[in-house]
Structure formats: C-alpha cells, structure tokens
Length: 289
Ligand SMILES: Cc1ncc(COP(=O)(O)O)c(C=O)c1O
Image (cartoon, rainbow, N blue to C red; front, side, top):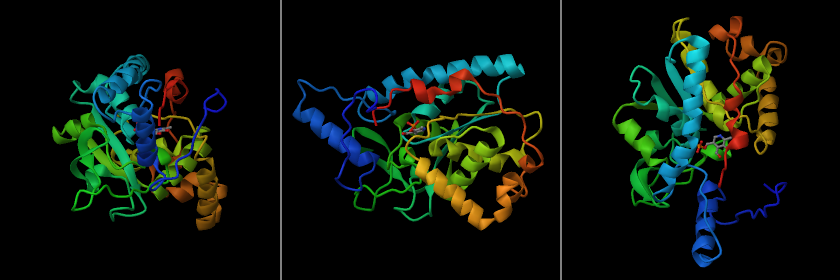
C-alpha cells in the first residue's frame, strides 16, 4: 500500500489486531466524516458492506465454475476456503450455493488451542452477538465482552465472521472446521515445496483441511481449494515455520512430504494442481483491512 502512495498508520490500541485496526479506522471516519470514506475489505461491518464486498468477490466463484467445468467436465465434490471475515470464501462459495452436491467447507483459525483467546474459530467457541455493525457469531465472554483472539495468520485473527456465513452454517449448507497454527504452517511448507506455490498463511489453513480430507476421498473426486498467493506480511512466520518443522524432523528437508504427512496419500506423489490465472485474486482484491 505504501508503494502505491498510501499513508499507513499502525494501531497501538487494544490487542493491535484487525479488530483494533477497524475500531481506529471507524473512529477516524466518524471524526472526519466530510473528508473520509471508510472501506472494509471483508464481508463484515454494517450493511451494505457484507453484501457489497460479497458481490465484488463473486467473480472468484463465477470464474472457478467456468474453469472447473472446462477442465474436469463436472462440478467439484468440494470447495475449501479459509474464513477470516469471510470474503474470499463467500466469493467462491456464492456461485455454488444452489448446487447442493458441492460441499462448501470454510476453514477457521484453530490457533494454538481450544481455550477462548487461543484461536479465532467463531463457530467452535462463539455465540450470536454484534461486533462493529455485524450481527453474527462472535467470540465473547459470558458478559458479552469481545474475547481476544489468536492466529498465526493476521487475516484470520478476528473475533467475528461475515453474517452470510452464519446463515450458511445454520442452514447446514456450508460446513466450518478449524485448522491449527501448526497444521497451517505444515500445509504452507508442503504446498511450497511440492508445487512451488507459497500460499498466504491464511489460505494455508484451507490447504491443511484438504490434506486431512484427501485420504478419505475417491480418486474421481475433485476439490477446489481457494488460494490467495499473497505472502508479504507473514513471511517471517513462514521462515520460522520451516525452521520449526526442520527441527522436528531433519529428514523433512530432503523429503518434506513423506515426513510431514507419513499417512497422507500425497506422500506417494502429489496429484497435479491446476493453476488458474484467476486464482491469484490477492492481486486484484481491494482490501481495506
Ligand atoms: C491473503 C489473505 N487471504 C485471506 C484472508 C482472510 O480474509 P477473508 O476471510 O475476508 O477472505 C486475508 C485477510 O486479510 C488475507 O490477507
């Protein structure tokens, strides 16, 4: 953003996570309402932001649908995407909501444990509430105070989730699961070393879920995993992850697949990963967070 000429101000209040940055941005907006417009980069905040951002992101699903039909001649068995606020996932899910046979799987930040404060899995530890203009699932304590959150990825580290995801969850149309920090870091390394694709730590959570599910799937099943390639901010975490993984298992340096995922069908050879120009939506996304 700086390269493009923006002034970037860091946030010193609260837990200095995304929630606090949004608080500060909203404060600035209401103070300077004549000269300031607030943009939110996920399907969060007061109406019409969740709808508006969803509609801008729908192109991901539209293109994915056309491309998978062309490449495989059928719709996918499942679509897997990470869920922070929920924009990349709703963007790809939306076009497939009416196709009941296509499983929609959102992956939240399971962080470092199941205690409140150790993760950002709103559907595991959250309950209905309002945060920053959105009525949805919120990680909060018994008195309704917003809980602190933790995730290795900054983009998933938020105590609420887009309201349309709450609807998809409650109607049973989509399924939401957590992936832990460790699983995401391993998946990040796996994808980088086997496919040369360095996913953002956010989307590495989705990759981790695919790694878990793949052994239980049929060869004819087709899975789309939504990847945002952007890895500008979390690069230090990723380096740390490699160090930690290498410490765990020295053999992982030579054969990361076999040692990280000994029981995975991927350890015998990765299936071909289709790359699509449109998958690189990180570059075309206007993120306000
Ligand atoms: C690269 C990347 N992917 C995914 C996300 C998660 O956000 P959302 O759930 O709105 O797609 C973020 C959030 O900042 C991100 O930066």
